[in-house]
Image (cartoon, rainbow, N blue to C red):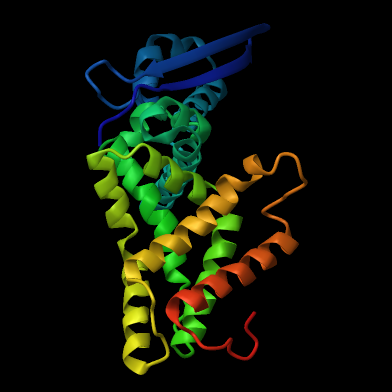
Length: 287
């Protein structure tokens, strides 16, 4: 183990022969990377002066020096603690990056700003991510992966489809950065970044495609448009609703995140979805 430069020190006050003797002892790691100066080496350096002190004072001096230079085991983090701290730092970097990418876009986002938000040096980002594009990919996988993990797995085709659409609305409402990320990518598409975006969003798209295909086979769905167009429209309607609608309604009170607007948007989305997929009538309990 390579030793970092550090100090070992002790301040000893001894009353001897009517005098107050104060000794400040310091030892530092050598420039060659050797261990810090030990208590034993300090005692050897002071050996010529020890005969001037009485026996009790000498014993006290020896004990004080040795105690002051003993390493503290509590200060050394365990491998588990280091790993947990590393995972926590990585998550904090991804969260900060999500905010900056959503607000400024990929090109304008500065890694220095992300590092400042987390309270780390810029170089620490590269310990967890190879480059800016890899960090962007991690953000997208976090955004889309979190939603994919909660896609419904119970119920018939129509029930799962409608639950996933209303769940998508709730997810974007709770995570406003999602809408801004998608809009920015659509407006400033670059080949390398687009491929990263497509890979990250492939899982939910594949899930919807498979569900629609299953519904066609079972006869529950009679799509009027291609599955990929349906997926695109459903995504665009919700993204635009949260990211752009407030700017188009400045002359009227409109809060897309209010509970009333969320429920209204869900009903409208389901009406459009049922029409495009040829769903004859709402299921019990649906809007």
